[in-house]
Length: 340
Image 1: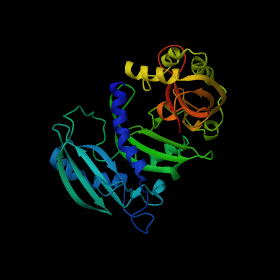
Image 2 (image 1 turned 180 degrees about the vertical axis):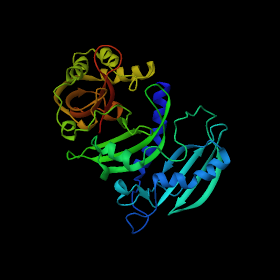
Image 3 (image 1 turned 90 degrees about the horizontal axis):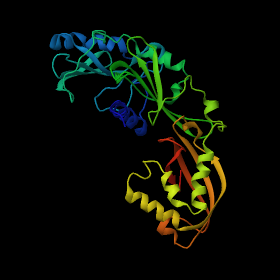
Image 4 (image 1 turned 45 degrees about the horizontal axis):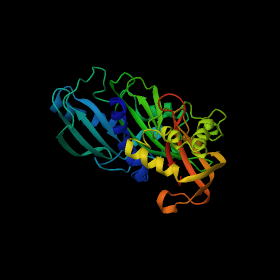
């Protein structure tokens, strides 16, 4: 994993934890327009941040009422009004290593705190937002909606900083979604909107792989004619023709990271005296990308070892296969599982 990808993944973990926790997006009261807009929230605390830091930089802005909160307080009409019943705002000191944090409830500052950042001083560009975000939350949301985001499936949003394609930090809005498709599958994705220009920078899935835009849900759920089933059948063919060492070589690093693991797989495959592929089915189609394919494979096998040793039963077995490109030649098996 590259340094840039690792940093991006660290950012995504914060948002993904919210997705998995089932973040709420209810408003804080009966009024549809309760609270401040994203611009007003920053402007409210800016004088105090400027007084302490001088050239204070807007670092994060989230529609929550506390630093650890996972409950968004967005107004029910926030995509038009831009309002939230509460905000939590971070301002960074571009000279030192501190930041100021403000909790806003309704139209007033509820609390103020100052702390030391977990990272050392970094260069903060002159065009990074200071007094207010250059792009309001609602405008970023409109740009994302135009690219196919489903806002009924929104799990999180915030203004923050993310690494661009040149490995430079850029301010922007992040929107996280967890969407159930008509097929029953779940599509988890993030959108990143440039905080200066308002342009949609990219959308990625939960493996940090690019999603083609605009999102085409119908296409995502259709069986793929362009696939690597031939490579998949080759993998099982090595086992059925008693060439298990070649099957081991077609395992991805994630499945076989060292020689000890490779020997375990070799013993596993050698335990099968016969293997026949009964059927191959494309599954988890909404998760397919140029870097991942998923299959459900029905197999008929013969083995003299008990199931508890290698997991194989005599007769019909089902295996769920994650398939990826890695190195040269055939695609590789990243996971060979007994369940989805």
